Length: 577
Image 1 (tube, helix red, strand yellow):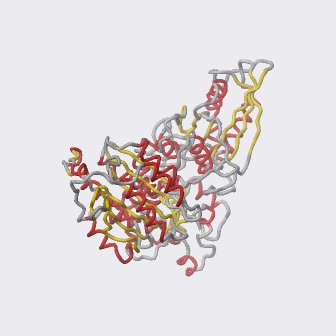
Image 2 (cartoon, rainbow, N blue to C red):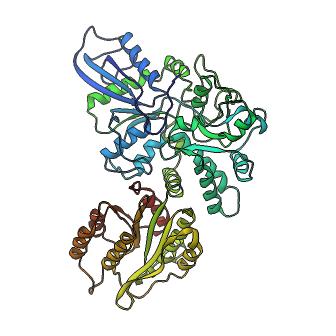
Image 3 (tube, rainbow, N blue to C red):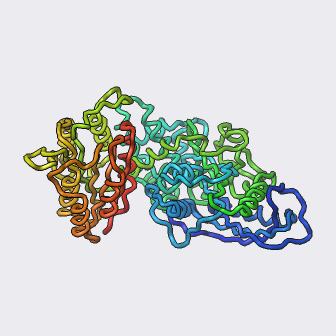
């Protein structure tokens, strides 16, 4: 069982170098030739809790002489926090994952990656890393995601006799029962993400205002979030005193392995593992052969995978408090009290990939919503109201592009808490005399002008004008920069369905020169542009954001504006201080 705790920014806890001998496409049990020549080094990055089992299997491979073909293989197994490897892989492919940030100096980009969850692979693929096509992807282990509670708290809720649901937990959170919930940042932690998805799904199924229910669930979890897993675990009660138990952390989504490891330290108040229904997506430990490795390494990776599918490896997993991919347990595994009898019935036979087939767009939406709901910012939202925004959208019951855009902005507004400052403009050509833009609401605290923003969004109507893009971008940038605030991401978010069409305005060259001149690295302003439909010029928009920072997001389907809006806001960098 591991003694370290998996968490954001954790340093690799162990590195093992194992010399093995392998040949292409031969089975694990095939006996070796007397000697080998040459050498291929295979690097494997594994989540810290499974790394000892992978390391031991590679060592056993050497002891058994399991090699053919005469090629010597060096296998370097490193325990690496999944978020660190994800950051390194994302950087290599030129993409960004919301909430992940840049890779640390200790992160490696391996040949084979065994993260704790396939959600990492899904997020990378869905981020726009088109060349990210890892091989294999089969699950080699499993750990259910549970709700961990101090045993006295769980007992009051009927544990272990009574089976609870996520709706039951949500009711406890929302009814003033003083149940203190916590979560590890779900943008950086797979168990936290699983808990977030389950909680928001329960909120959505409760009837009433779904958006309000989801936002409430997000904010309830956000109040008890921790950046690091060890920090969250430290908030569980360290004394049996009832007042201490009542004031400490009362519930958090963790893996079954986390609970077993925590209780293995003999804390004064053990944790109960509650297996809530419907079961969250488990940690599934995919074996991902990363793209771009040379054929000899790919062959070695396939042979190593066979060593991780044996009965002996299942027993090694049990030593680390992990289950086999099908949910069964090896010799010596001690399931927490209340675990479903006969293994995990919900486990897919033969293992599984891609987090049980969960829609990557669902994951992305949850991560984006969380990022917005838990960060503070200062933003000027600018909506195109040129004549082309009247165009109907067949996939949205023929609502106009403007109506679809306003609906997306309205939904997004519900996620921003009162710590935000937001303003609203519209633009076309000659909206106010010769000026191309109109201020509907100045940038100000959402706490005092949420109703004003909602009302102003309801007045947005397309004009008969063209697209005065360049003058508007420059004016919006200057406005945000003039009252720039430290400690926040200061940004312009602009929606448009066209190119610049203002013959009386500044040229593209003049715009870029002026933005370059006034840009201040000590007061950065991010410009996020969301292009709608087929008439936008990505190159024109990207020329702007290359100067300002930010990004361009283009969709030909206007009904996706809402998802793209959330993703665009979530991918902004952390605020400078």
